[in-house]
Structure formats: structure tokens, C-alpha cells
Image 1 (tube, helix red, strand yellow):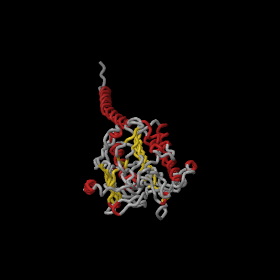
Image 2 (tube, helix red, strand yellow):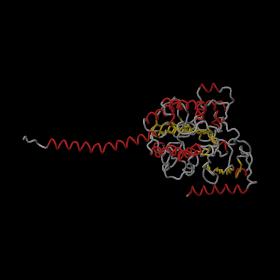
Image 3 (cartoon, rainbow, N blue to C red):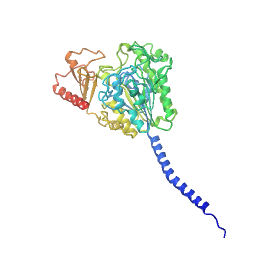
Image 4 (cartoon, rainbow, N blue to C red):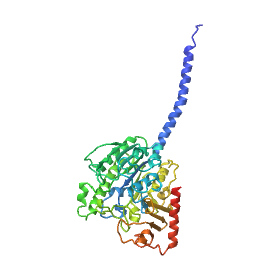
Length: 467
């Protein structure tokens, strides 16, 4: 008998055991990873398009017959259009704070506009934004366009949940030089991930389209959440030559405004086309909405936007200042070509998008409500029995409360100048929107009990915010 050393046999056995253990450990981990990746891949992408100073009815699908807005109309045909969507506020920064946090802007620490000057803070870093909600759920997140919520490292987009950021930090810029000219000193305002960059002479809306496409491509196989805060049709009105010629026969300032709206619509269409080319459109939720009503400021030629029968514009809490165009489209998950009449608000998007995507909205107190039921059924009740708006702080802050068809405004002003407001009107203005949608007649004296009811809602809201 030939004696053979057991070493090779032992080595072989050890190798087999090691391999088995390796498979036992690695394979389940790999499968778990694959399952997680598959789950993430199945989640819908999210694109929020937040336009700037777009009037209540400024799209064909809202009844404007002197504009061309095929891209907005395309979203409406493939989605759900709201007729009573209210912005979180009537001013830029506050509205954006409400959208991104799902909270009353005053609760989110942004009751009015924040500074457009570098080094000035804005929304508190402690606020949990929609960017953080989706980033923490494994999404690729991106901010493109306007920010206007803080100009310090801890209040700029990268510190508020957005992995990538491209755009301007202040309230507005010239679209070619990328300078903020409206309050001295003139200063350049174009940033990528917290670093100043220069693309002098390049049309900013085109740059944002480029960046949205790049963010989608960079996400690769991860789902994406992109906040595209397109700075149009905010002044300066700089529509492209094609649209300036198209609207040359309209009276000023409608022609300047219209050219910029259609320019914006064209850019939205370019992104929609890209999503379709990449076969991503079916599983992408697109929210299209204005931050508040149109501007009547001098820099906007004192107007140009269209609120139809509604009183008010940007900077006030009458309907024309806060009732905004709004469409949500998700061909793979929501009804198409439908209209919703329920009262809803821009604060609702954070909880709604989180619910649709199956992610946690976080643990912070939210004033917004999940609109999933409303989106899927026209007969569903609005999740809001009442809602509260406040613009500014202190005793002179504008405020409004709506409950059902009743609306009470305090310290009110009318930036559309549709009639006089007496001192008593300015103090308290009560209207029933069903019988007087134009808010022309103050019925506070005729309904003192309703005034008290709505004032109590305001008091309760303020107490809740302070606590």
C-alpha cells in the first residue's frame, strides 16, 4: 500500500468549505442588493417644474386664446389639471419654502422674500426638504434654476438635499450675462455646487434644459428627483426672437410677457421630448406649477399676465396672487386628461410625491396633505377643510384664511389695482368665492359670525406655528 499525505485532501476540503461559505455569505448579500436596486428602479422618477410669476390662466389649457403653450397642454392631456391650486404664498421665496418643505412658509422660517446677496442666510438648515426626502430614499437629486432660499453654504441647495445644483441663488438674473442688476451693486450670480461659474452670453433657459438632461443621464439606473425652478416668465422679459416675432401684434406688455411664456413652454417641451426619447416618460411624475401669480411690478412693464376674472397678482393674497396653473402628469400611474376642482395647495406636493413614490415624507409636522385620492378620483374630498396664508411678519403681515367657499383677508392689498380698498376693507375683507369669485365685494359687516370663525382659524394656526 502506498501511503499518501492527507494535506492535498485536507486542502481540497478546506477550499470547498471556504467556497461554500463564500457563496452562502456573498450570494444572499448580492441578491439583497439586486432586490434593492430593482425596487429603486421600479420607483417613479420625479420632475418638479416650478415656473416663476406665471399668471393664473396663462396657458391654452386654462383658457388663454392668445398664447401658444403646446407643452403645458401636452402635460394636461396626459395628466390631471387643477382649477383651485393655491401657491403656498404670493411671493417667491416663501412659496418655494412651502413647496420644498410641505409646511406653511412662516413655519418653515420664510414668511417673505430672503436676500439676493451672497453671504445672507435664508431657509433654516433644519428644515427637511423634498430633496432630502428623496435623497434619503436612494434617489439621485438635483436642483436646476432659481433658488432664492439662502446664499450661505448651509442654506444653498447642496446642503438642503440636492446632490447637484446649477443656477442662481438670488431672486432673478439677466438671462445672458447672469448678473443680478436690480439692487446694487450689480453682481454675477451663477453657481454649480456652491462654486461660482461663468457662461457669459449663454441663454439661461437653454442652460437649464442642458442641466436637467445631464442630471437625468447622470442618475443612470437610480430613480431621480429633479427640482427645475425655471426662472421664467419672471422679469426681465427676454423671450427668444422666434416668439417675439410671433407676438409682435399684441399690445405691450402682453406681447413681451407672452413671448417669454412661449419660450418657457418650448424649453419644457425639449425636456419632455428627451424623456420620451430615453423611454422614461411613462414612469416619470411631472409636476408643473407656478410659484404665484403674475407680476405687476415696474420691471415687468406693470403686468402682462392674465388672471382672468380673479382680483390680485403677485404680492397679494387675493385669488390672482395665489391661485396658479398646476398640472401633474404620470402616464404610468395617474389618470390622463382629467380636471380637478378641489381646493389643493403647493404645500401638498411633498407628502403627495412621497406617497406616490412609496417613500417616507419624514417626521416633521406637515401642513400639506397627500393628494393621491384626489388625483385618482374627481369625486374625492379635498383633504383641506381650511388653509392659512401669511405674507410677512408682525402686525402688518398680510394673511388669509379659506374654509369652504368663505375667505377672509387681513391687512390686505390689491397689486392688480382692481378697485379701491377702504381702511375697513384693508383691515378685514370677507368674500364668498362661490358667489363672488372676483372678490369685489366685502361682506364682513353682513356676516360677522363668519368673520369670527375664520379669525379663530387664523389664531389657531398662529398658535400652532409658535408652538
